[in-house]
Image (tube, rainbow, N blue to C red; front, side):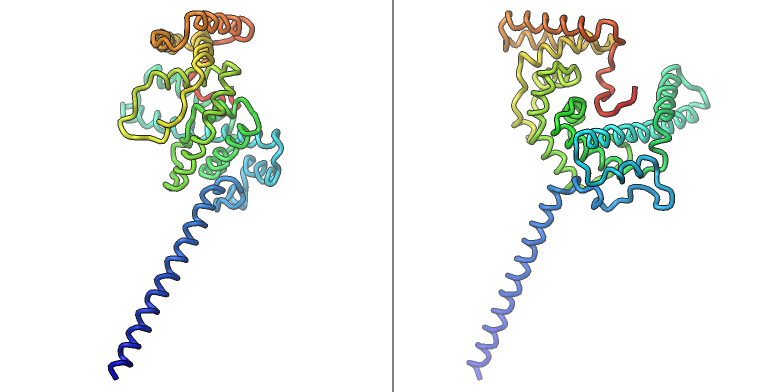
Length: 309
């Protein structure tokens, strides 16, 4: 009788161990599947789980995006990037106008000159984008944008590369909330590609990326460890010449700030005087060729991330 009990206990224990093994194996499979989804999550746009638009009356953006499904040539990918970027500007303008109007109401109806200027700027954005974007789902637009900016950058589009570098892994949308897993994906892909895109942009003398690059040389170390700490600093000569160019075409306040940054960078003695002089000469020549008759540029406007002007 005692032997039978021992055998029964042994069998029961074996079943428990086997069940635990099966459970752990299932968990591992689910984790692997989860990781696979994370890598591919933003790519197949039709599988994102969000409607491209209201099914009864899709927006113009949604109709165009549906027509682009499965097409991956550069022109189509860049078009998706630009149009989704434009529609994000549409949503940002709506959000900012509501905020400004709310502030004005709280102030008893009074509005400052700055408020008026901002309202006119956002109204101009809405005028340019409402026919394309009205009725679109904001989260879907944001996901398409985040997927297409990388695709376009990988295919060599200069604006997409610049946009990818200066916007980081942040979704430029005031309302979109994403999971922690998707946020980690965006950060991991930024770390994987930002150095290559920065190099390409600096070789072109991109002023937006030039400003970003010189700030990386001068920024203080992060208080907490960050994966970005492992990124190599961009080429110092290319950084300096693009920063010089940026200072020549920037708005006055931005120019003053950039000139201080350039002065601090030069005092680091990373480059010899001959290369500093060469970088300045390159920037002056590039400015004379391409920007001498152009309006000053707001380097904080994320202009490469959309096609609105």
